Image (cartoon, rainbow, N blue to C red):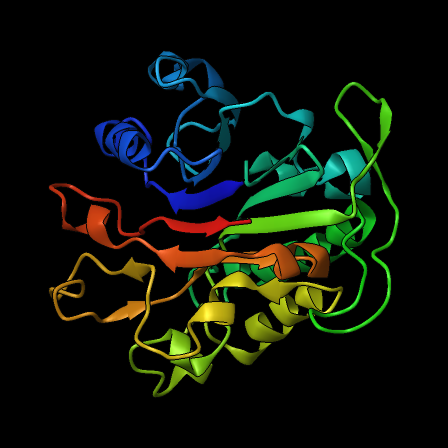
Length: 285
């Protein structure tokens, strides 16, 4: 199974790029973020022509997530509220969460808030959102040992949008634009990162609390070194100078981590005309 994640920064603007990439890289599931389009405006037919089904949760001009799958997905759900209840409804106003099951693997596609600036209302929102994510992942069945440890992943139930309770699989793949560089080696220059949004201690701790449920970084299994990034600012020739950040991640429960064959970043789409500022990251199980 091959799964990829890509913040496309507007699916309509980058449609040609995504279609061409899928033709050259026919993954089983492509997880998109920042699609920036309402559901009725999503270009489903272009992907259907390639043999992909589209599962979407869109929003005009901002946010938006989608799953493109060559096989039907089951137990598709959007937002936190189906599991966390009414207390998470306001968090779901921004379309940032979609999940579905392929074979025995639950795929959770996320677009984590940016946070804008340290100490701002958007920064506080990001920390609250990450706290909700931790609760959500626990309820999905993401409990378990860290990769290489011992124990069993927990059982949970997913309440889908039609209010049907269905068992969640233990195998969990979480991917997306996390807007967090978890380690200093994930930043081209971490000097002063303590005051930089996407790299503050509070953000890192919030993400680590999710990972501590029992998730491991797929990319770091094969690539322990720095200098590997998934996002570059449009300014200051950042891509040409490799002044990037690694903020697009794929995390796995231990059973999937042991099945992991490969994980890599594909920087080629960043070289295209009018590219997204992010590039695809993919795993093979």
